Picture 1: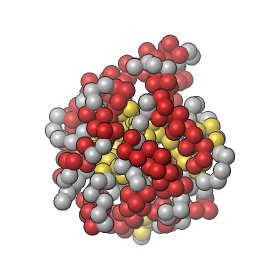
Picture 2 (picture 1 turned 180 degrees about the horizontal axis):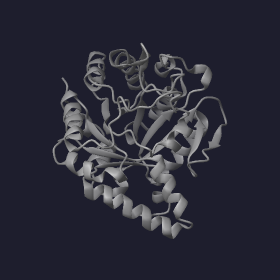
Picture 3 (picture 1 turned 180 degrees about the vertical axis):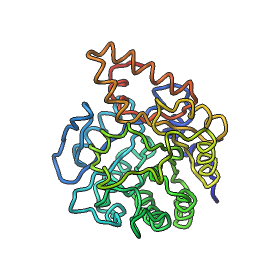
Picture 4 (picture 1 turned 135 degrees about the horizontal axis):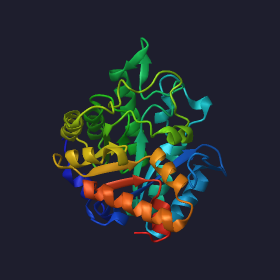
Length: 323
């Protein structure tokens, strides 16, 4: 079964995220998890966002949950010794991301929505989103590895495995693996419309995932492409079984959000990416000016058709009651 509409309705937390019209319920807080213990390392290019080990991140998310932040997206940051050309350790159940998800689910069950990043870039020694074969990214080899990663996240308890790689056919392949292994409650958030953007720089610093050569133009969308390609990507992923359709970045593609949201039947998400976040911080010297700007940005996402908003501004906006 490719399409299971019940997935987005499975828990109250999922229903609130996908269907509540309020901005607060729509927000998702991103996190970066690293190995070790007692690590709480600020990211210089993203003030207010840290790389944290499992023990510290559990404390952070506990405080977030107390404030009413119920949806969280987890990005793994692997040590260089754990990386190889095939992203082998990305699917290792003993990696920090999988351990963190298990612990969070044991603590919060259905009261939390956990989204996990499914990609190869943070676990490959070359930093690309796929496996390099004959000096280019091999789509089918990459999809096979992505399925292993997604399955390991589902086993750990993720609510949504978030395919951010932009390989062709990976949503159908992941859905088939989840179905075959009995994970009929696990959703797929697809980065269906992800552009080869210049706004990702701070994230690549945070996740240590910058490519060591070349770029990602062969798989991420060209910034010059028109609406038809965006619609093609979104509708294709929806047909393959995606439960949430993501457009990334957000601010410079609000027109695309509108076009996509008008044609798909699944909830639409936007990623208010690291470069957008850092720009806002650089021009807002005080809380009041930042509050006004963040609120304006969030309303623009909603007006364009976004149901789900992944944003590094989430914690500050909710903790300071900006919404």
